[in-house]
Amino acid sequence: MRKIKGTHLFLSLILLVTGFILSFSYQRAQIEKQNVVQNNEWKKEDSLRSQILNLQKTNRELAGDLQSLQQNVEKKENKLADQKEISSKLVEDLKELRMVVGNVKVKGEGVEVTLQDSSYIPEGENPNDYIVHEEHIRGVIDELHVSGAEAIAINGQRISHDTYIACIGPVVSVDGNQYPAPFVITAIGNSTTLEKSLNLYIVDKIVNDGVEVRVEQESAIEMEPFITEEG
Image (cartoon, rainbow, N blue to C red; front, side, top):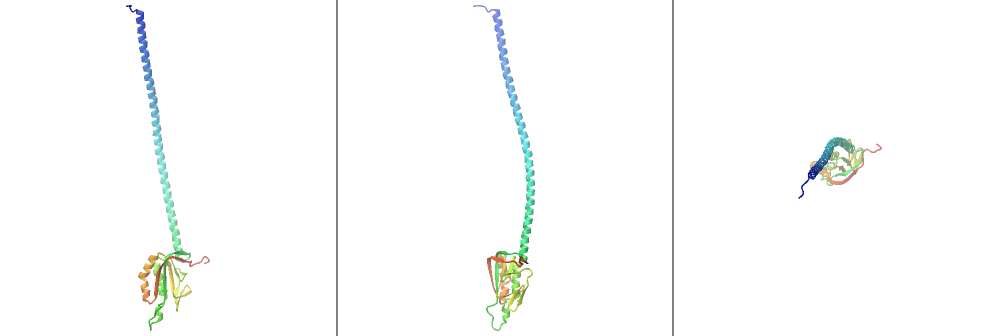
């Protein structure tokens, strides 16, 4: 067996140390590389986290602005709705007033009341007691007004709040126009309400005076204005 020379032993020792240094350096490099990668990942995550936080903050601010804008829009909408409601109410009131005074043409459901002189006069009785008088017509008209009639006409002639009705012998004068019996009084309004009110409060009274009365509901009644456009 050969003896190991000192030179060989020294070289082996150098190679061993060199290998250890190289291995240690490689591992150190890998660790530093991993640390760099981890550090970059951490920086990247931190950057993304900061961006997300900024976006969340921006979203909250935008949500607050949107809510404020929605509240302002709602306030304006409510204000416009109130103004529209007031305007609509004024228009309806004006229409109703025009209908009451009779200066617009109207159409709608309602009732037709026919007052006819009695067809039978007992022997020896005064015929004047069995004919239609002014008070019978006025009683019907007053009851129609109380029951909510929007427009009233006598024998097709529209009447107003200051219409003059008077008996002149066997005829009745309405604002100077004379009409013989039968007298047909038409009224626009809730037909059921008007009919019930007439039958409940005025029909029996007129019948007891010897006058014939007929009340009928009508689905469509049309009346010309009391005051024409020409005045």
